[in-house]
Length: 137
Length: 335
Image 1 (cartoon, helix red, strand yellow):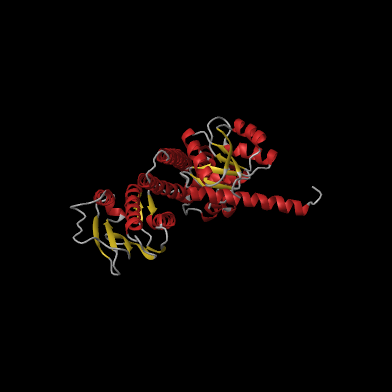
Image 2 (image 1 turned 120 degrees about the vertical axis):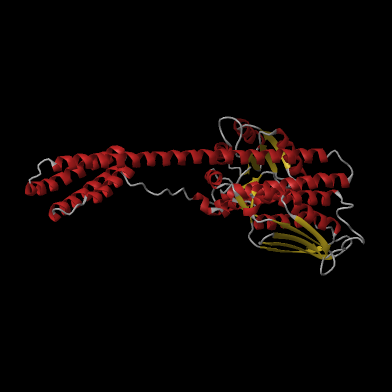
């Protein structure tokens, strides 16, 4: 699903710039950027992205896992985590937050695309199976 | 591709062995004292003093020092009752008191030493946990910094117009990925002392062939890798060497060809061997790596020396080029 609109939530400015260019070169549209969880929640409400690409450890009090739970719960937008390490504890938290995938840092274009496309596909399948289960909704 | 659904085991919580509760341990120790005391009373002059140590140790280890002292006192009292029966027959009235006092002291010392040992063990365990957490944080920071460096290279490369110049920045990013993957492998394994280089080599070769196969060329990659454990320093350096050799083969080995084969081998031994072979255009006539090296070869020679290894560059059996790195096994590389 190219042309998907993606919100980047990351507190390292240099990484944000690199992500923007990489995502655009892969054919995605940047819905916006945010560096804190509060900004992320506001940006999701305003820009209504197709997917949120979020650093799992953001600066400040609330981490990406908490924000992901709020985004999934309130806006039903899939979240893909950016993380330095895919250790069991981190992934357990990510699964608990309802994340659809993760991208390891440093990211590569191929890794980003694979994780984003898989997450979008899973999200679409979820919507369709929910519709099939409850046609009135 | 990293999807969370492929990691169901992650949902399992850390299963810690259930600790014997303090009350249960003390109750069991009291019961044991009772059993030993009964035998002590029945057997008469057969000494069972050493057997009382079992409940004392049990109570101290699982229920703490106070419980250990209590069981020690109880054991001495039980011994006293049995001993009194004997002393009445012998006419030595004071002996049971003396023996009971000595046993109380002995069991008390055992309980004290054991509880101190248990406390020291717990402190050591906590210290190791703290150190492991700090080390994990350092690895986390390292990977974040590698991400920033990789991002900077990407942003700087955008300003370049020459494709060859851009490729240089791309190669630098490949080297950074190589180091980052090693950190990931170390962090995931939880063992920060050494890493299985075979897994790293397989992943790296696959990724580089995927991203750097010359246009129009169908390339076959064969990786024959034994498990070879190396320490982190050696792994980073060896990873960069492998990166150079693979990139060199991909860049120069298959020019103008529609198909080719790249073979990567890693064999354990003394020394270990890592070989990268292509069936491409081969070495130029009169090639001497030491006399006229390019940057890639210069780096390979320097880094191989750094890990106390040796390089052999030769023509491959089916044409092309074979480069073999000989490097010492883990035990001798640490000395």
